Image (tube, rainbow over all chains, first blue to last red; front, side, top):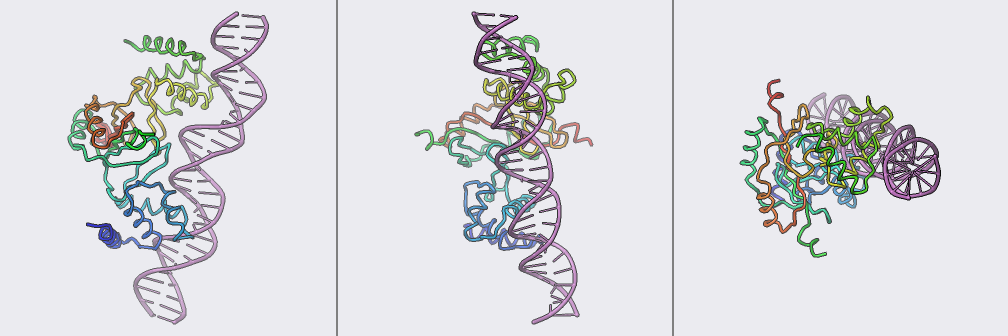
Length: 144
Length: 144
DNA sequence: ACATATATGATAATGATTATTAATGGAATA
DNA sequence: TATTCCATTAATAATCATTATCATATATGT
């Protein structure tokens, strides 16, 4: 399924939920689906500003929260580099994060289900969410 | 090795590095070694205030940074619940976090080395650090 | 005890995120 | 088409954990 199709489906699904699709919201959603860079709110804002000169950063944040509540975006909280957002795979999954260029990529899915099952058994926790982050140097930054 | 011994060894090791051991620093270090609760800077501060009425929160933060630079404390960054610190196991390891009471516990060590090796191979990253957090409800909070 | 470099404590600054609020605009109805 | 209503937006103020600043206090080696 290509991006356009995903976008149309997501927008239709949100409409069905009673969410109004404003130009601003549409722009943010399209931006999120058109990148795999895990952008910050600020990056979304500055990326859209040329085409939406009156866009407010607050609107970006509100749209991200809306999408989060609809489980249509994954919020990755970082206290040092600010929050990042993943609209393409809005469910918990591992990330590899370059500490030099701050690139974030998705490593092929580990067997997280097995790991969660193990942690759950050992701790007695009911696990509802997880964060699996691996920090280091990406292939490009190793060369520098 | 009991806590007292660990404390003495840690202080001696810091002295050897040229770190001055002030009463405030000693108090923060001792506090960290005497708990497995992964306290926040604020909790350390309020916990020590009765015995150290002139202690400043800034000093707590500075001491935590010092310990971090000496790799003697693990800093767990949370943008929603503030940072938490682990002085007992100051190396990366998994955590189970209760989203209700905010308790943090250490599940028995998974085979993180194998996981990291896999991620490293798949991504080409040199992995230097990791965060493995499992969020959910602890056994006690499930009853409520 | 002295000298001096470092640490402390009080407070201001920072910066990402959230809250506030007046103005705007879309949709349903008459 | 005009009207009313209610959600959304944009601008900006507020928040809050953390960091920076700097005058004063203090640990350490002599």
